[in-house]
Length: 126
Image 1 (cartoon, rainbow, N blue to C red):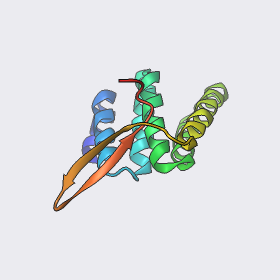
Image 2: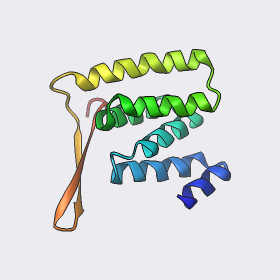
Image 3: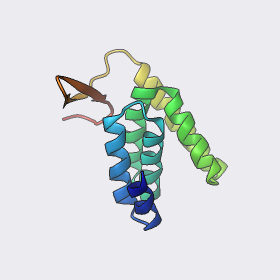
Image 4: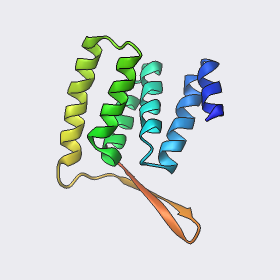
C-alpha cells in the first residue's frame, strides 16, 4: 500500500492504476482496489478504461462496487452533473451484468495446488 500511496503522491497516476489493478486482479473482492483503479482511470481521462474497470468491478461486486466508487468521488468533490452521468453509466452496466448469457474472458492463475479465476466482461469483440 505504501508503494501505491507514493505513486499517487508523485503524481504518477498510471503507476498507481497498475498497482490498484494488480491488487484487484489478485483479490477480486477488494472493493477499494476496484474503486481506486476507477478513480485513477477517471483522473487520466480514459473513459473507455473507466468503463472496463467499472464493468469488471460490477461483475465481481455488484452494485456495491459502484456505490463505493461513487461515495469516494463524491467525497472528493465531484460535481453533481458528473455524478449523474456516472449514475446513468452504472445503471447500464448493472443491467448488462444481470443479463443472461454474457460472454467474457476468464483468467486463471495458479495458486499452490489450485487456481484463482476471474472473468472479465465488456471488453468488446475479439
